[in-house]
Amino acid sequence: MTDSPGTHEAWAAALRAHGRRVTKQRLAVLTAVEHHPHSPAETILASARQELPELTAQSVYVVLGDLTDLEMLRRFEPPHSPALYETRVGDNHHHAICIGCGRVEDVDCAVGHAPCLTPHWDETARPMTIQIADVMYQGICQDCQRTQKLSSTDTN
Figure 1 (cartoon, rainbow, N blue to C red):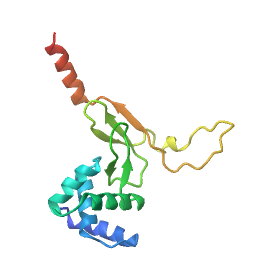
Figure 2: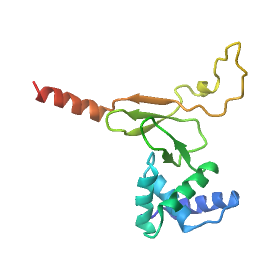
Figure 3: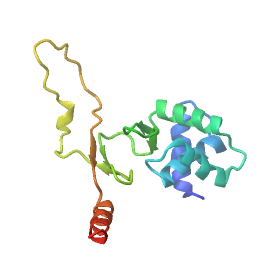
Figure 4: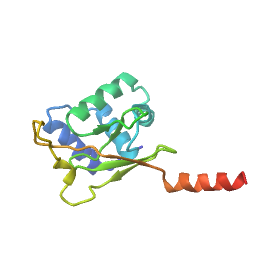
């Protein structure tokens, strides 16, 4: 598993800009998340171990936490699922999750100016400036719908 030199250079520059050393572990985790977006830590660990077989689970969790704190990774937690990670940061996108197979897709804001960042406050609220809104769509993907239709016709 290798990434383009340009991507590694960009990640290295971002790490340095945040005062972090550029390490094989950090680059392996970033590469794994890039290649497996919306994945849990266990999947990221397995992928990163292809590049660094000696990498420990503890190291991956520490790197994921640090990179999330630096906003180089985004962490989100779907219901009934471990936390998932992605490299798409810095925008206000959302996620659609299939309740059948668990597949996750990115969803851009439905309207260009991110209306979800402008909540309606009732008279008892103490309003604040919203910076991030995390909308999660749940539904059934086309593959699962197709499988369900096949299953229902097989039993008839």
